[in-house]
Image 1 (cartoon, rainbow, N blue to C red):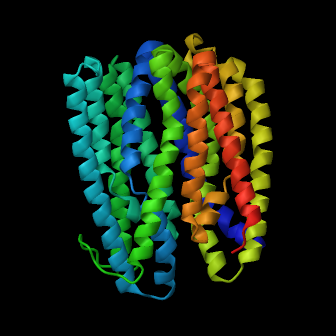
Image 2: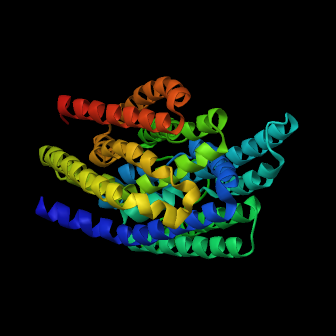
Length: 425
């Protein structure tokens, strides 16, 4: 187990170096955007960003995860033909889905405009964000890079994109740009990330793995299992996106853009610790898969319990830190208009217990081939979340949205623990 943790944290630390810079740069970019636009315009910006982001993620197939799951065995057995066929299939699916999603999104924007459902100032920023939906085609190469220990390359791309975003946001703020300028500043780095991942991944596939990739529907031995994993995982992720963004949509309808702006700041601060745990999450699936392939199923279950306990301890430490510094930090960084975000942040952060303590469960279920468990669990907890979200927002507005998120995450965590304790692989 010592060797497992050494390799795990070694790989995670590489991504963490990129995430650390990305988190700091993203936090500063968000602060500059909020200050430059003001509460109302920033609230509209958050709504535009959320609408298009959830639309794009809904159609993103998250192909990096099945690539890791099935690619591990192909690399171990030097089965280049199956690896080539799998990557070709995954990339073809990514390209087709991205194109269809872009065209559908484009149609919806013009339909919303014709029905007077879209503010005039929101149209062009939404079209800019749709450009990222069309560019979201590098999922398979992302998975290949993680599978072949290309974490340094991914971290490098993260840092470059974060630096580019920071420069563009500073330029937009200096030029007193409107929503269009800030939309460009936030979208262009995301497109750069996709393009760079595609290019670096393609080169690694060709030079190191001897893979020949051709767009098309190539046959390979595990295609049915691959597609089943892809579809169920996509449903899981799509349902998860609902829980992550529907609160913003309902707040915009029921409480207005100002409430959305305050809520976004509180949520963004609470997400900072998750940025640091995300590198660990990203490397868990390949490491768990290797552990299982070595016949260490019971030892892996012990590791899952240890990682969950570590996440709970981190939650307590971070919560204490935010309570101490948040009251003066928020007005200093975002401006006095956002002071109310402090109290909301303390409520919202309780939900992070579910995210941090629940970190190893999804990769574990994926590694043992139980993706349907993840999907069903996500559907169940999201249904409960949606049932309480609307009345909670009506009663307590931003605080109600935060309380509903606590219900969602703690229900998810307790359910995942029960499933984990009741099963053996």
